Length: 188
Image 1 (cartoon, helix red, strand yellow):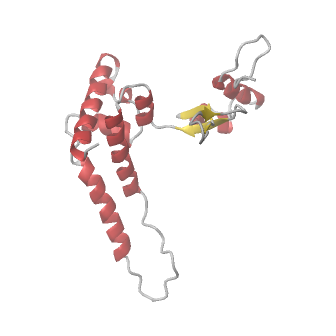
Image 2: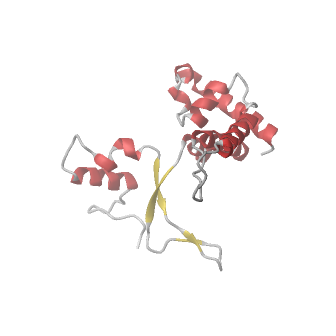
Image 3: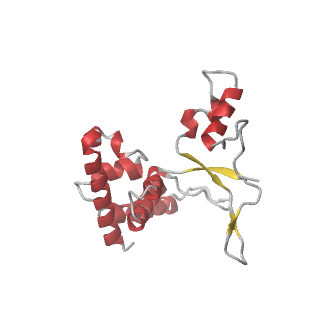
């Protein structure tokens, strides 16, 4: 049995056809809910495979699919725009930035004393910011705009007006150069 459902006329049904049919079943053209285009942005439908420990072969005997969100950095890496070093540098930069956006962890045990001690929380946030700063200081001024756009804001290079049309290749080059410099500096 194939992993894709077969239509009436013998053609294979793609994942976009499956999502379109889900939207069509709703009956409403204005409220698409969880299957609407806004929620499908960055969503990737893939086989839910497992690796056989004996043979090392990936298997999916029942044709199970899963949906997973991917960001622009991973999308560019999958399309061959970024190499593995650039992808690793971008991921490190993004992870350290996202850590600065989270609040400090909650106190795990019951606090008995009457005066709160925020020193631990402040130390955690200072540590997170310094880790981001250690990587972020290697961003060159030339490539800062495009790196922030793709890595931090999760937008495509073409989202910036200065990198649309004929200048798109220039924006991609700046992204690649900037991430290569970061990868060299942090040892990826």
